[in-house]
Image (cartoon, rainbow, N blue to C red; front, side):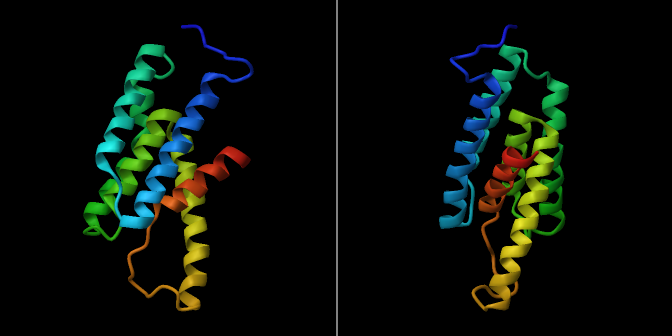
Length: 151
């Protein structure tokens, strides 16, 4: 299928903007409520599935591969008895469905690095306590911005 270009904006830029908006909303929800909206995530997953199948941009195999990072985080969530939130895995699956496994994985790597740096400083300064639950999706948002900017 032919790619639609509007002005100087192509499909990839629109999809990147959609994922950025999705992450921004989920980051605010996670920060305020320490949870993610699974309904919103499921809607984003279904939208990615429909868009990719209709446009022919990605097939089922590519979308499934895109969800691997999220699936691994979901597995770790169950193994750790929710020490890692399963919502984080669903958010990564959404990223993977829209933009592929590499972007999802790099978002996790950069986001985890940012979280380690920031939370280390907050632990040292006493702003957070050991074992305290913290929002991770804002760090995934930072990781995604890093992917957009540097990868």
